[in-house]
Amino acid sequence: MNLNNNEEYLSAYEKAAKEGIDPRCIPQKLTGEVPIHDKIIYPNYSEEEHDIWKFLYNRQMNFLPNRAADEYLFGVEKLKLTEDRIPSLKEISYVFYDTTGWKVARVPGLIDVEDFFKLISQRIFPSTDYIRKKEELDYTPAPDLFHDIFGHMPMLTNNSFANFYQKFGIASLNANPIDRKQLETFHWFTVEFGLIKTAKGTRIYGAGILSSLGEVQHALSDEVEVREFDPDKIVMQEYDVWHLQPILFAIESFEQLEEGFNYWCNKKKIL
Ligand SMILES: [Fe+2]
Image 1: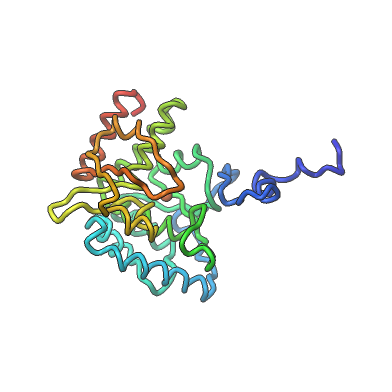
Image 2: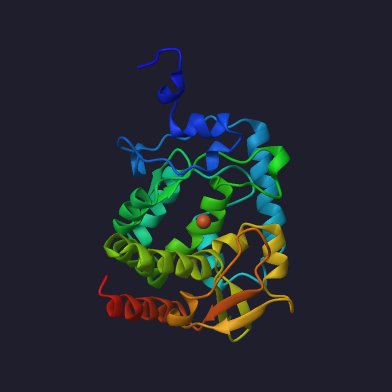
């Protein structure tokens, strides 16, 4: 072992930073227990961090009436998300547990897919507890608490969605690499970029849209082709993570999402 070369002592995280890759984009394998539910400690956020939350919260909420799905907006209320302060993961976890039986786990950043699937298969949502910097208000390359909490968590108070998401975790653990790739695509067009048709018009429930200023203004515009929900077609649809989405899929109901997913997974024998 060459002691002058300390390269092998660096974690994947440190190596990425050295190579100029944003280490937040490197999925981390969880090595120990992560704090879950009542074990999560509320960090000592600075005033500046609370202000970043307030700014992002108000900026998105401004666009959400008549754009976001009712189920999502009910979730925001249920979780008592307000502009006042960065929410507590522990308090959210208590609400989840009482409504859909989910819990929250605090994770250090982007986590390894296997760890992610394991947690959601147990109805545990992994969340970060740090917020993006002032310089990254419009874009951050990796998840932060604004994406995780504001984007994802309200929908987990909805029973059908919560059931579907647990099944997504279970199916992903059972899937071979080809099916996993297709599941990733399914996740993208539903959990992250999903739309729903309602009597009042098309509405958004995908976290990637709801937590992004550009996407929330773009998703319901004429520039987007909205296609009918069809799991077989969704899993084959290409997408580009770096640009605004030109094609999105709209479900009729969250029951349809759950049933459609079951149907696709049964065919693949992964659920
Ligand atoms: Fe996400």
